[in-house]
Image (cartoon, rainbow, N blue to C red; front, top):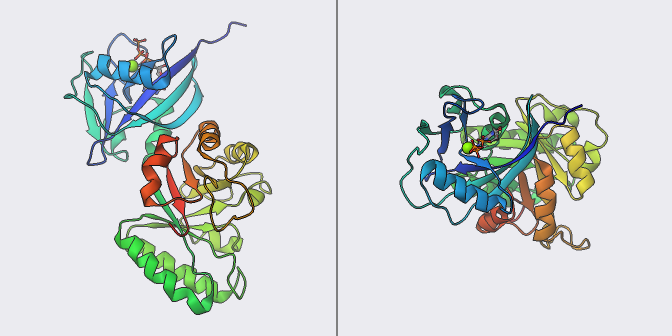
Length: 318
Ligand SMILES: Nc1nc2c([nH]c(=O)n2[C@H]2C[C@H](O)[C@@H](COP(=O)(O)OP(=O)(O)OP(=O)(O)O)O2)c(=O)[nH]1
Ligand SMILES: [Mg+2]
């Protein structure tokens, strides 16, 4: 049987200060002409992803980039080719965007992109992933008698614009399934929705609560007990990963994102050694979907995490 060509492609997710991304229409004469895509193209012999992307963006759009952040990479099977797409985010460039290949291009929000026309199939999911916030705050109410402290912090985070939270209370004095905790969870959920934020529930809490939340964050040990995704596709599902095996399992369950760590030392895991950034980057590359870095992270470490391929940061104390 004849083998399909395998093509490695550098793809640019160019993001402007308004949070819009640049999409381009594939020119006449190329396969899939008329379809919309992120700018980019084939990696040539001897180039790394960043170099290929810099060259392609110069050739296609006449802009110069000095930095691009590895974001998500995966392989996609088209009928005639298999492509390995390495998506990189680009926030800074020199020059005015011009279509040098007579192609149309447009700035759009990820949610409105489909109004432009048909999007290359492999690039539909990445557009969805771009709507995922880059900061993921994990609750820390801890116990009934001191819960007020975190509530204040939570309101502060909401006011700072954090849009993604996780409810996770392993140490609740009355137990992780108690009515007092459920009341707190429902109160937090209502407050999140008031602010247009999402609340995801950790799988340590009763399964009957999961459907109330905007999604579920599966602990690795809970993920491996499941054969399929435990919630609706229109809700979010994250998996907490520590090893490569967790990542492979999370892929099997078709997780929307992963939380990987701990990357740096953290008070919550004093006895296990941290992954470190190099290993984080290697594992994140295998994930094939957005990965949040956890462990010693905060809003101020976001750009460092993104240099190592994180989508964003997750934090308890942050
Ligand atoms: N640039 C880009 N390519 C994508 C995206 N999604 C996706 O499946 N692809 C696929 C389509 C193509 O098979 C491949 C990119 O190849 P290409 O033909 O555009 O490469 P190129 O820009 O170097 O063009 P050429 O000089 O070879 O004509 O990757 C995307 O969002 N952007
Ligand atoms: Mg191209």
